[in-house]
Amino acid sequence: MLRKILLPTIFIVLGYGFWVSPDFKEIAAGVAIFLFGMLSLEEGFKAFTGGILERILQRTTNRLWKSLSFGIISTTVMQSSSLVSVITISFLSAGLIGLASGIGIIFGANLGTTTGAWLVAGFGLKVKISAYAMPMLVFGIILVFQKSKSLRGAGYILAGLGFLFLGIHHMKEGFEAFKDAIDLAAYAMPGLKGLLVYTLLGAAATVVMQSSHATLVLIITALAAQQISYENALALAIGANVGTTITAILGAMSSNVQGRRLAGAHLIFNVTTGLVAIIFIQQFLLAVNGVSDRLGIAEDDYTMKLAVFHTLFNLAGIIIMLPFTGQLVSLLERLLKKRERKVEEPLFLNEAAMELPESAMQAIRNEIGHLFENAHELIISALNLDPQKLRTSEDLKELVETTPEVKKIDIDAIYERRIKTLYSAIIAYISEVQSTASEHFGEELYQLRQASRNIVEAVKDTKHLQKNLVRYTTSTNPQIQDQYNNLRLQLAVVLSELAAAKDDEEDETSLLSLDSVQLVLEESDVIANGELDRLIRDNAISAEMATSLMNDSAYAYDVAGNLIDMARVLFGPMQKELRDAESELMLSEEELDEIISSGDNDNHN
Image (tube, rainbow, N blue to C red; front, side, top):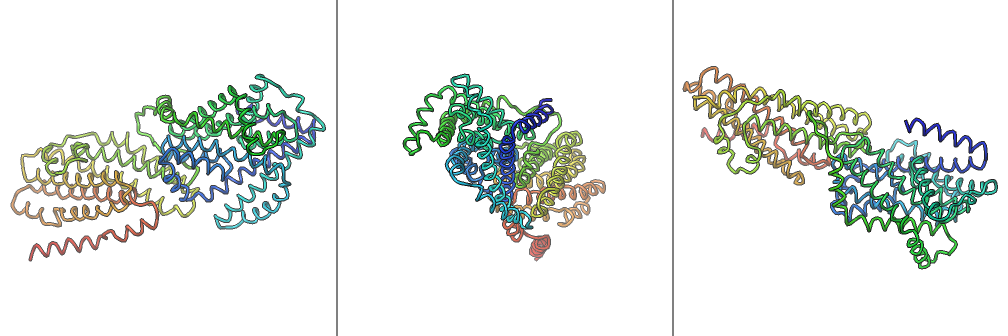
């Protein structure tokens, strides 16, 4: 309801302003051009995120101070705390970073955004920046129409900077002309009342414009034209800081619970920082004067003093909140809990993760990992094995033999509840990503789709296998019982190796050990190694048993094969060069057959 009223209200206010004062048009146009510049700048930086940003995030967010530094530097470079917030929520939703790291980035972004005030106050108002804007726009627009992604990205950045400079110029000129018609300084409000009212106005302006940078530029240009008082400008800056949290909140609405927790942390931090600034405003004013004297800022240079104030109160917020990051994480996890689900739902697939191709790809990988965990648990249950013992047991044969009786479980019900919904969501998400991602990700998306299908096929083969596992592991015939326990053992070895590979994903060569597992499976084939013929020839098993064993051996082999194929994609290296190198080292089907044949010949000799 509020959204439906807000847009018409803004149009009415702007229309009235245009009618009352032609000079107001220039200010409004300046804001619009500045905001368009912000959008262009964000679009340009997104073109350069690629795999680089993902690797930087993973390497620079394993410590809180690194996350804080990343937030400061990235926001300083991109001049958009909103973009950094959206990227952080996107990576957090995809599981690339943890909540504490995300909070550190948001803290740093708040400090990084203060550099915008320094640039505008120290450079934008003292130099005729419109002269720089025109060449940037000309060269930028030419580059935007190039086919190369890098050139287009550079074009958007240049055009964005050009629009930013042009917007600042129009806002400055507009306020200079506007003061001849209407003196806004006459509406200045001193004291606590003015502090609170203008803080609310600053927050409201930022909510409307969805950019604290734009609000700050508007405040600085109005202050430079003496249209607002210094005290009221400080209050507007505090309000702009609080209002910018709305962008993070809106971004988190399409995210998972982790994204919503991060938006909550952003809100708590900015509101706390704002309250500290309001309560200790006099102390901050004294600090601003002291810092300004040391930096050689003139007594009446209020625009630069505003930049100093903006930096000081954000820095104070970080100093106050940073030691309590752990407690903040615990609080948010208690307040925003994952809701209980009767049917398994995706943990990582959400719109927020789609903001960047690399975060979308990681979200898919993590969700397939989630699907594998469910399937892994189901298959272990179908084999009647203890998951914990499977991970820790040194003698899997003994583990299988000590639990010979397989109990029937309702695989269909588990499949519907914990497998099918996830698989459907993954396939739909991959299709959506494929429609927007570049061709660079096409091959990887195909492999990930196939990996998720491998998991589902393994579950379906397990269902076919279970009927005779239950029947023959309790058989009075020791020969058929041993054969079916051997099938369980083969699958237990595969599941154990896959669990180890998943736990040790950092070791990108660990999957090569699956070659030896594949070799064991080939050698254990009851048809290929002649075991089935021997059992029939010795009348050790009946014809019915032989048929069942032959079919179930194929099912067990398919279960193992599908899971191994999935692991090569899901737990293997993400970089294409490493994947290609690993595939060169892996044994092909022909090489496996050759090793098995040579082993058979050695045995005959």
